[in-house]
Length: 342
Image 1 (tube, rainbow, N blue to C red):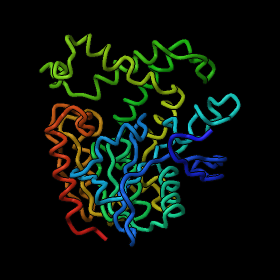
Image 2 (image 1 turned 135 degrees about the vertical axis):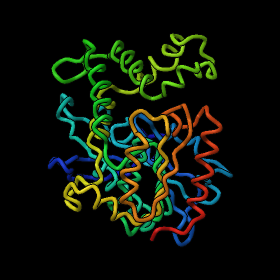
Image 3 (image 1 turned 180 degrees about the horizontal axis):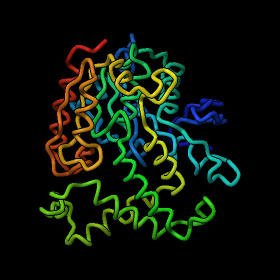
Image 4 (image 1 turned 120 degrees about the vertical axis):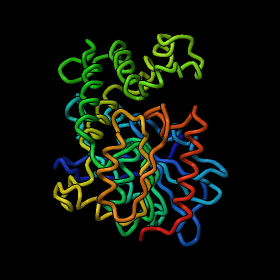
């Protein structure tokens, strides 16, 4: 049966863990047309739990990610249910037998796909929000002679300790459901999804968002209505094992955790040649401006431009925030108009 989206067959892929992921599949979609000299490529990686249809709202005529100008490739991050994931990988008793996939592993396969399918050896921009931003950083650190620009929106070069604690908390809530037995989910974790969503809501948006009852702009009639309607079922359309797999990748995100940089994060950051736009949100509770400021000091060609928004982490995914969208569009367009870093 044919799939409604294309898939790159990566074959047997050696992972950083020492395991080999056999018959690894990378789902993707594209927008626009590749020009003759292959110089108009933008990579738009997916963030945590998202699939490519969830990020296409950022693509459009007249937008920064304009398919009339650029060839935009959206690779689905492993573990999102379209690319290879626990839910679609025929491993017996998949549980802890599913190989851990790092962001480093994922970006290497994305790079292979661009080369093997289209002969692309230069990328004009990698744009990503949240875990997508972590992939943008990884692209620039792994392939400094290839990537001209990156836009890291509410992302980081390395998952911060406090961010790791957040991941531990929401993971524990999901696994506290009685459906989690002996390292696998035996049925849909209904209570786990509800608990995960409520915890996520308190971190994904700022204290000011809740103090100002900004949720009313979305049509919620009370705080409880907002939590039930917008968060309790937010992740229930995904496979719970997929969610845990991507949490693992997120928690271990670190552009220096590889043979090239040997854990030296300042060295990895200073090796980036791409013109870099860092756009944390000034109210983000886990991808904080302070972390971006530390990273910024080591970049050779960076701009730090925090998003002023009470929407916190969600400011970087402006589906309901026209002011945040306009702010991001303005600065990404300026990034694309500027000379590249290489």
